[in-house]
Structure formats: C-alpha cells, structure tokens
Length: 86
Image (cartoon, rainbow, N blue to C red; front, top):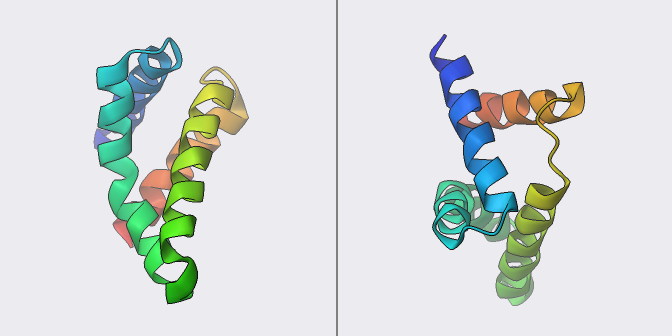
C-alpha cells in the first residue's frame, strides 16, 4: 500500500515537472541524485563528472517521455522503487 502511495505521489510530481515547474524539477533531481551519484561512482574516475552530467540529462529526458497511464510508465516506477529497496 505504501509503495502505491509513493508511486502515485511520484507520478504527480513528474506530471508537474513535465509542465516546467522548476521546484518540481529540483525535487525530482534531489530524489534521484543519490542514484545518479552511486552509478557515477561505479565508473572510471576519469569519466565520473561526465557520467553525472549524462545521467542528469537522461533523468530530465525520461521525465519528458514519462506516460503515467501506460503499463510502461507504471512498470518503470515500480522498478525504481524495487531498486531503492536493495
């Protein structure tokens, strides 16, 4: 039940961010920042900063592609929450 509420809240946040609300974009960045930095740390130290920038760009591109009323969108959110549990 809690996971469903989290997904619904994140879906609403993404929808507002898609409309260009800077506060919502910042909140999404803050939520995903630990994941982005963790992924970048696993990369070659030479490319770490580049990797962070690319991952941030991918996050904002994914926000624009997100479609909450599709199975794909819901699966992506569930996958995100499952990864965070680990």
